[in-house]
Image (cartoon, helix red, strand yellow):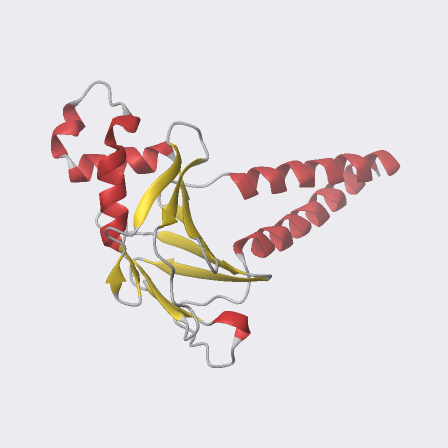
Length: 205
């Protein structure tokens, strides 16, 4: 019985890790870190996401035999500047690329916002990116400020959220989901672990 528990626990951990770090091209995460002097935005996606986006922005690439993703850094920068809004204003001229990794499974672009974001009255964040690429879109938005972190889920239809610092009760629930995606996965894995443990115990009997 002890061996069953160990193998079940190991399997559960492996499945949890796989679920946590794997995602589909239409699933993106946007992590905002608001600071007093500097703010950043990191967007995580897959290389296939970038390829699908570039083929929409540049239709001639659909017939290309080989595409060097890093050659389109400026296109990607300009695209996300125009598609992500803070307080109804796009980020054009306010972002510059700090880090970029497009070819690994966990691809990402990290932007630094050049000017200070006024957050005392809250920030309306609108994410319009990739809506022209995927009919079913999942955007996970994480907002970090000081020691607090808020998690939101947006889609192609629901694109806006209102974030208020310090957990104000005035926060409007525009796209807010109380449970972060990792917690959902956690409970799914726990349930799977219980099923595996029951099945294995019956086989031994």
